[in-house]
Length: 318
Image 1 (cartoon, rainbow, N blue to C red):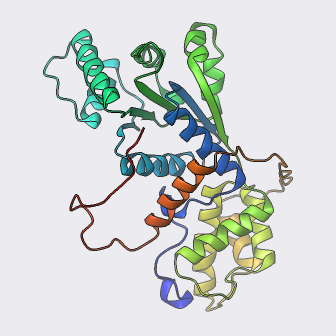
Image 2 (cartoon, rainbow, N blue to C red; image 1 turned 60 degrees about the vertical axis):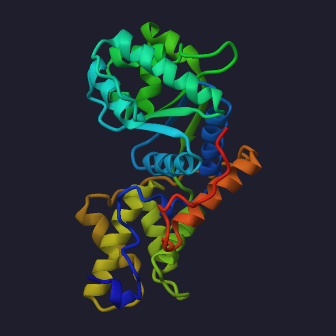
Image 3 (cartoon, rainbow, N blue to C red; image 1 turned 90 degrees about the vertical axis):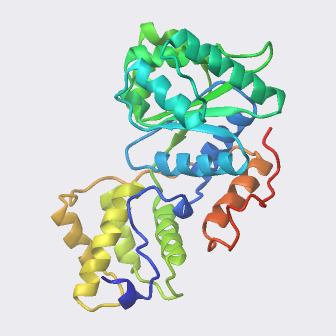
């Protein structure tokens, strides 16, 4: 509706987790490096936590794309209201493993043989579970058992558990202590600072085709930050509807008044203290970050003719 008016190719503030729009803050770079370290190092269980809307699913989508481009086998579980048998069924289907039996022991034997075969060829497999805080205790225990599939030195199946902070609370419960002790890598997503919010908005506009002129006034950005408290999903909602309001007023720049109108409509107009900016340096895993940044740039390029022909060349995953 407003794209032509503002000179945009696409809507920049959709809330779906499009990895092309992943904004690489130092915190996100640290989380990416930790995930990649855990997977490449065959560390077993990796824990990713963060508040709702801070970019966990978008981060996971980028990691999935990176893994697939490196020929790693992946299983992505996003429906976490599953029974144990449904978990195994979804995982085996995603990994592309055929198993006619519904017996758990037969499934595990088939999975173990398949993983050992991949391991012998220098390959791995990754199970990623989103919204893991909703998993039943029984399913969480079965995931722990999956990490028993190993050689004498390395885990055969890497597991990423992603969830809200409630997941960490659950893992502190005594009956889940064995699972908690299996977690070897922990990483988090956090809200954006004011400066990061400004960069986040500018980057999404750039990817969507915006010109050099600012579409949001400084006051509008400060208002967005104040109401969204640095949560990317809320930033997207505010920006999307503020653009619509500016378009309705036929104004080329979004003002603080446009943002305040949206905040009132969505009942976000309440004073909240800004978050302090962390001064911690991101984890330094330079090659991994270069690889992931390359994947991100590829996602932002038009798909060339011939992709999918089997002629692409990637460095083998190991």
